Amino acid sequence: MISVPASPDDTQPVKRSAPAGPAARKRWLLQRGRWWLTALILTTTCTLMATLVLFVRAIPVYSPDDSGDRLTVSIRHAGALQRVSTAAETVGALLAEQDIGLPANSQLSHPAAERLSEGMVINIAPAREVEIVEEGRRRIVVTALENPLDILRHADIALSDADRIWVNGALADYDALPGWTVPARHIRIRRANRVTVIDDGQTAAILSNADTVGAALLAAGVKLYHTDEVSPPLDSAISGALTISIKRAIPIELAVDGVVVEARTNAERVADVLAEQNAPLFGLDYLQPAGDTAVSEGMRIEIMRVTEEVETVSEFIPHEDRVQPDAELTLDQSAVVQAGRDGLREIRSRIRYENGVEVSRDLLESTVVEAPQNRIVAYGTKVVPLGTVNTPAGPRQYWRRLCMYTTSYNPVSNGGNLNTSTGATLSKGVIASKPNIIPYHTRVFVPNYGNGAILDTGGGPSGTDYWVDLGYGENEGFKPWRAYTWVYHLMPPPERITYRLPGWTPNSRWPGNCG
Image (cartoon, rainbow, N blue to C red):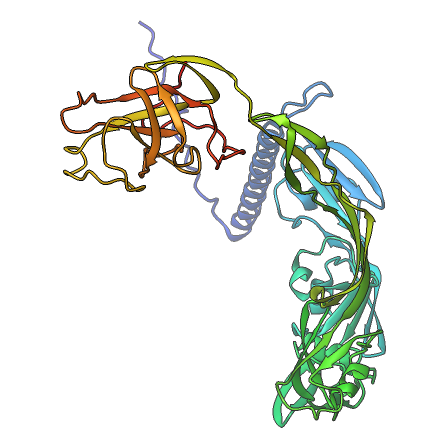
C-alpha cells in the first residue's frame, strides 16, 4: 500500500496570515483592498443588469394587429373632430401623446387626471372675447365659458332678479340664465332703480328696470285710468331714484251699448264725462241722469241709445159669416148666396227703441187695401109636406122629421107632480122637449108612442138639445124609454117655427142615432 500525503481541504477558506514586516504588510493590505473593490464593482454591475432584464421583460410588447387593450377616443379641437386609438390612460397623457397644448384661457371638458374610456369625446373650448355692457360701461372678457351667468360670475359681476339682462341682443329672464344653451358673445345689463310711488296718499317703494314711468307702473301692477293724473308723465324716462305721484279721479259707472264700464273721471258735469271717455251721443240719444247733472263718486251714467223706424205691416181683415132667410127655399135646406173673402189692411207705425227695447208704437196710417166680402148663407123658411106617416088617427102629413134621444116620465117619476110648463096636466100625449128645437104646441107623432104635442120642457140629457120626454098619466100603461127615435112634426105647422136648428149631436152618455 502506497500512502499519499494529505492535501488541504479546498472547500474551506484558506487562512492566510499577514506577512511579517511593515513593508510587506503594507503591500499586502493594498493588494487586498484592490481585490475587494473589484469584487464590489462586479457585483453591482451584475445586479443592475439583472434588474434591467427583468424590467424590460415586464413591459408588454404590442404589435400593430394587437389592439385589445387600446381605446378609441375623439378630440374636438380647433373646429375639427379627430378620432384616435391610444394606449394612454388619462386625458393629460393623451394630449401629451398627441402633442396638443392647451391655449391660454381655453377650457378642457374633462380634468387632465381623468381616466380615458371607450368612445369618450374630449372638447377643447378655445377662449373668446365676450362684451359686457353694464349701465353704459363697456368691458371685454376673454373666457372659454359660454353660459352668461357663468361668464358674469367669472367677471365678478353679481345680478339681482330685478335687473334686466340681454344676451346676444335678446331679453333674458333671470331664472332662465342657468339653463342658457346659446354661447354668449354680448351681454348688456341694466340695473333696477328704486322708485317711490305715492298713490292717492299711499306710499310704496318698488325696484324697477323699466324704461319709462308708465312701464314701471304697469310692471308693478298699478292700474291706471286715462283720467288719472300722473307726475312725471307716463312717457318720462327713469334714471336713478324717482318719485311718482298719482292723483286718482273719482270712480263712476258708465253704461253704454249694453256694457257697464267702471271708469274714473275728473269731469264736473255728466255731459263732460262723455267727452272724457270718448262716448258720444248720436241722433235721439239722451243721458240718464241729464247732461247738466253734477258728477258724484260712484254715480251710474247711462247712455240711452234711441232709434226710430217706420214699420209697415199687412194684416188680414177676416170676413163675417151671415145668414138670411129665403122664403123660396124649403125648410131645413140652405144655400150659399155669396162666398166669403178676407180683406187686407196695411198699417204704418212709428216704433221707438231705447237700448234696443221697444218703448212706444204710434199709429201713423191704416189703409184698407182690399175690403172683406162676407159669406152669406140662405136658410129655407118654406114649409111644405115632406111625406105621410101612419098614426093611430090614420095617415098624417108631416113637415119635419128629427132624430131625438127619447125618455119617458109619469107622475111617479115626477115626484107626484102633474103640472107642466104650459099648464097642461101630465097625461099621455103630453111631450116635453127643448122649445128652441121644437116650439111649444107643435103637434108630433112618435112611433110606438102615438100622437102628442110639445106641452112641457126639462133639463134633458147632457151633450145634446135633440131630446123628447114622453109623458104618461096615472094608469096609462107607462113605458120606460131610452132610445133614439124619429119624431114627426105633423101638419099643419104651428105659428112659431124654429127655422134654423143647431147642429145635431147625440147624448154624450148614450151614444147612438136613429139608424
